[in-house]
Image 1: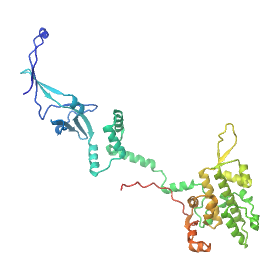
Image 2: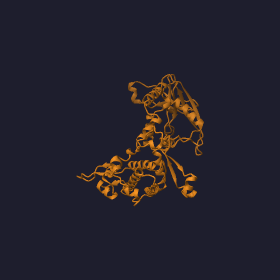
Image 3: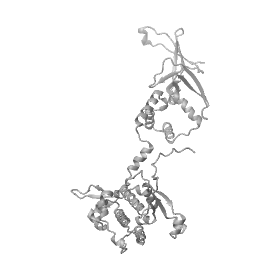
Length: 434
């Protein structure tokens, strides 16, 4: 039976006229109660039709009575509106709707669940269903976001909501917008260089001597004057080497070739001996700058330490060093250094000179030991000037009285036509899920 409450008249109000007696009755609960709905920051079209739903929730073991959850759903062609009870409202508050009957002066109170509305984009719902159907695993970022929404502090949850509001979803863009973006990208990238042009541009910026791409023979690819100037060439003295009097070189690569040329008495080898002398000085300069980790003293000190002519010392500083600003206050001294790129330039130019001496087929084993570099670093230098790297053939290492195991340590850098330069780096392929 519904509870009834009789309201008594207030004697103080009789001065303004008697009030009628009315009765307040609490109606029994039923499966279709009236529903209160509220929304925050959402404008719902007045023509939207809503459908109510009810769901029975199994209570915990301490509660014997089953609870009911109400849901109200309506939609437009693009937006869905869903109203649900807030947990704090269902737990601590009760809302009622009173219906007044003027004939009986009675008010009937009906328990009314209060629902709060939120909205969903239907395109997102369809997309999420497709993703769920394909079994796509959430990324680490998505997983952290979901945990933040569920268990994060109020401040972190607010931050996540702000990020979602500012996020752009490409799937919601109209066809005209995406077409416009694509056309603008195409217009802005039409003048970009192709992979071949980009590779040629990268190669042109490499610190290697000038290349003759129209050469028909290896000795036409590089010009000696681009590496050794005439001023330097004219001050290189090799008369003692021509007479075989002494071998002043710390390089085993250079000494081995001087001996070989000295055995050939059929003609003079002045040009090759001068190139070998210059290679020996380049090796000394390379090792000197390595000991100083690229930093060099004044040119006069380098000239004295290496026992070279002023023209050669000046050529080394001009080609292979860069001037740095002095860190000392009031100092007017020029500080020179060999950067890693310039150290590579020394190796590239030296590689070309070695090719000229060895008829464009160089065994790099001795040169590697002279420079104290890794085989990979030196083979890369020869590749950068257009060489292919090969192993010694059986007739070659047999003539040199080597075993096969010893021959495996010797690599040959061969310059041949057409030239083979390293390919420019390409984009890495995207990793695929296993």
